[in-house]
Image 1 (tube, rainbow, N blue to C red):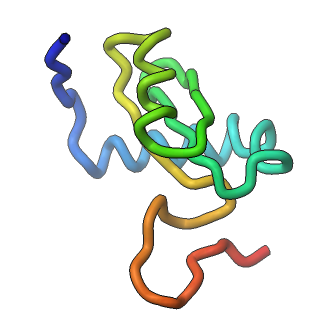
Image 2: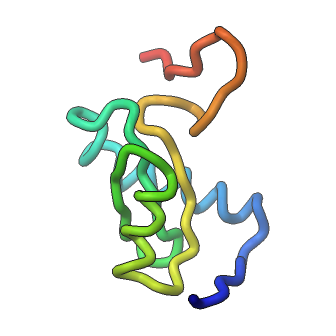
Length: 91
C-alpha cells in the first residue's frame, strides 16, 4: 500500500477544495446527491461521490493515486457535526 503525503497546508487544501466545489462541482452534484460525500482532488479537479468518506476517497485514489483530497458533504457546511443543531446550508 502506498504511503500518501500531504503536499499542502490545511488552509491551502481547504481554500482550493472549497473553491473547486463552489465554482465547478456544486452545480453538477447537488441536485441528486444531497447528504452524500464528495471527495475532490485539489490538483486536478477530479471528484468522486459516495455514501461515506472512505468510499469516496478510495474511488478517487483508484483513478488518481497521488490525489490530494478535500472532502465535503453535499448540501452541508461540514462533513460531520456534533449535537442536535443542523449544519444544512441555508438557501
